Image (tube, rainbow, N blue to C red; front, side, top):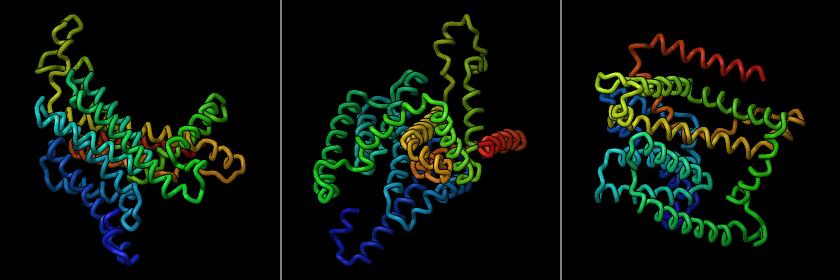
Length: 361
């Protein structure tokens, strides 16, 4: 966005140029979604891939930003880009290409810190996925000797840039001693202050109300696609339990060789799907848990005054991680289309349970 302000002086032209950049980013989200579906999920039906990618782009929190230049649009693209790079790294052997992709992943994560403080969650989720997939496959998807130093130096550099902007722009009128709202320190102190409330019955109840309200909201905003994704994830992960078969041979508890190689049947496509499942679930869960905790004191005051909702309207934090969830939901719906009746009943009862719990509060 910064070059736009250098190129133009007319505020109206700047506004239109920013909207153009904004909608270009939204369009790129669809491109990466299509590439993930066809290149890594193995969806051969191109029309279905286009349809699923279009549904993801039309996801309300993303499409609604078409006329608003806010950081959620860039964060949405970065989430898909990070997932794309991890899926790419999953299929690479050691060598200069893997080293280059590792550097690119680190640079993207460091750049995300310049977009918003919440990118710390994106970095944490990425590291957790790398660790989880290492235990699943026995291989690390990144070159650790490159990734960790790059991430450390890049994060420090990004933080220095953020501090410089805060000091030279945002804190000019407020004074040097003021603390900027929504900064890392501000949010951390807010979460730590609210953490002790979870040890009380009322605090835990309000916290669960926030979580449940957000789950209900994401079900409404995704038109239930998140429910299909959850059911599909459960079926997918269940198919990789320890008692499943490897190349037609049943795993037995006393067969040490098969126990050691129990994930040998994990194909490249299914490895990509497992990576996307871990990435999307961790992203949604961590963001929802942390944001609910940060808002707990506000919700408590509003509930006491009788003016509160269940914080279910504040959806933009976790919505960026719903994009891969929608991709997975569309993919599983396509894959399980022959078992549509069974899938429908599983989704229906899960949605009914969420609605029942929500109305009960």
